[in-house]
Every structure is written in structure tokens, then in C-alpha cells.
Length: 92
Length: 90
Image 1 (cartoon, rainbow over the protein chains, first blue to last red):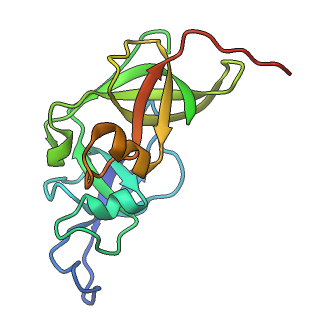
Image 2: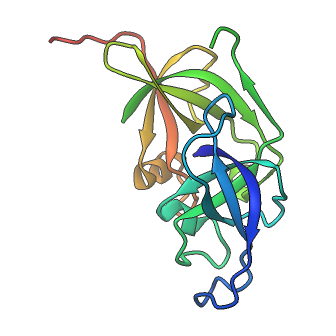
């Protein structure tokens, strides 16, 4: 899993069967010290509660499809949880 | 499997049901000689790894699900060991 920040929302008018009720959010991947890294990706929101500017952690691949309900829908990234706090050891 | 060093942890209350009261540790990946690669990964802890512990991380779904014994959990990275010593020949 990696850290990301929700920067927007994607509202499709036509979408694949099983994804109708799944919120799709723009997520900017972050480094360990919460700096931007790479280009934003669209994640399906497994928690259905992530809002704009929230810090989330997401998973890719098959695990992303397993995090949704109904599971095994065709998604490649899904938000697994919303981060309350990241603690990094001093000196790192 | 990959090696890494625990450099922090994540607190989260709103998450997928499987991740309730699981310890999520931020692991920075290291090379065989112990130098850090700058990449990191968030892994579920199963061996009570503490801060700055060199750890062994499984980064593949099926093995991770076997380790946590949850056949349909959305999990891919699991800490499965704390490294005491590494021998590198060349």
C-alpha cells in the first residue's frame, strides 16, 4: 500500500457493470514524507467516505478489486483506508 | 520478499473491515547491503516489529493472504520477519 491525497472526483456517465455505485476519486500518490510523487491516478473508494484533501492509503492490482463490495469488479487501484496520522521516526 | 527498515506507522480508523486493529507500518525498502532505496511501502505487521527494525516483507497477495489466514482480504504487503543478520557474498 502507498500513501495518496484525494485531489478530486471523477463522475462517469457510462461505466462498466458493477461499478455503478463506486465513487471514483482522483488521488495524487505521495512519498513517505507526503510530497507529491508521480502523476495522479483514479482510485475506486473502498471506504466510500474519502473526501477532498484527505490523506488515504491505496492498494493496486487484484487486491484493489478485492477491497470493494461487490468485489472483483474491474478496478486497478482502490482506497483501503483514510489516514488519521502518519508517524515517522525522528532521524528518518 | 523484500527487505526494509521500519520508519514509521499509520493510524487509521476509517478503513476496510479487514484492517481494523491491524498495525500498519511504513517500511523503507533497503538493498542487500542495507542501504536505503528511498522507496517505501505500508505493510501489515504480524511479528511486532518496532521502529528502526530491519524487517522482511512479503509483497505478494496470495502469500500475504496465507500469512494472515484471510482468503479474501485485500492485502498484499505483510511483515513476516525481523532480520538479525545478513550475509552478502559478492
